[in-house]
Length: 177
Image (cartoon, rainbow, N blue to C red; front, side):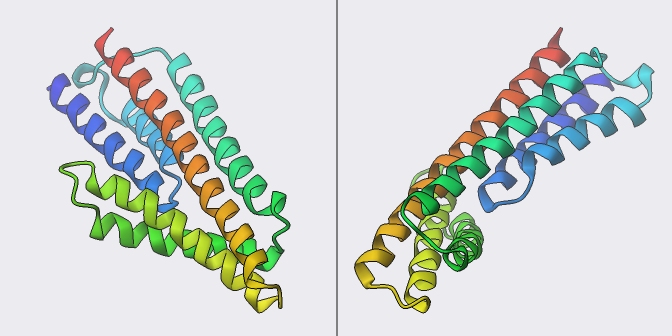
């Protein structure tokens, strides 16, 4: 029974890790899932691990948010983007990432992940360009801000995914020990 609960936990963690692609707080959901497992699954039917694992997971989730926020903020603002562009870039990245997750790319297994990353970045780019156009800036200025929003979104999401991957590995190690 211990193994079944551990497998269910790992599958839930994988689903939440993938949720990071569409802008959801997947790392925090991973932490909540581990806390629920640790708190509510009876001790006689769950694998045991130290509470310090929860602290490590919380630090990793926080690091993922800091990385994502810093990369996204530096992207558009370094290029001189407006607040309107940043807001539209965020909205565009969410729409693009969700679309990319469902559309995917023609790559076996990883196509949906790559699609969500690519279309999320393109959505951020389109949103930022729209915001700059709406603000009355030239197409060249809009493109510059849009490209910065694309790269900011891409690097931010990859950083957050990396932190979530660390969280997943920590839980796997904790369950195995």
